[in-house]
Amino acid sequence: MSITSVMQSILQYFTNLTGNLGWAIIIVTVLIRAILHPLQVSQVRVMEQMKALSPKQKEIEQKYKGQPQEQQQRLAELYRDNKVNPMGGCLPALIPLPILI
Image: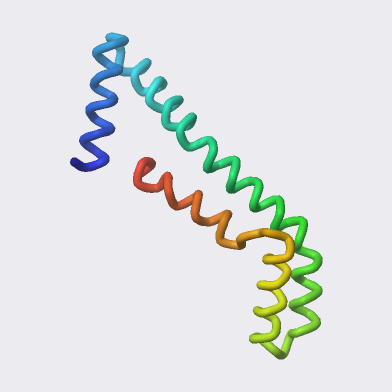
């Protein structure tokens, strides 16, 4: 069963429940936003952590400018020491794509 048919069934259910397609769309939109909210919060948290580490990251990039392997190692240590996953901001953004498309 495809996502499209699932969404269509959900929309049809709420249309029958409310008797109005407009209200059904609003209800489905609110439900989807509520389901995806924890992912959005996680993404924002990681982005804030990365922003806080930005000065240290730039310092490492300048210090090891000609040594890409050393630079990557130092950046990995920085992220590990601060318990930040640089991909943590990207993955939550990819999960809602099938729903939104």
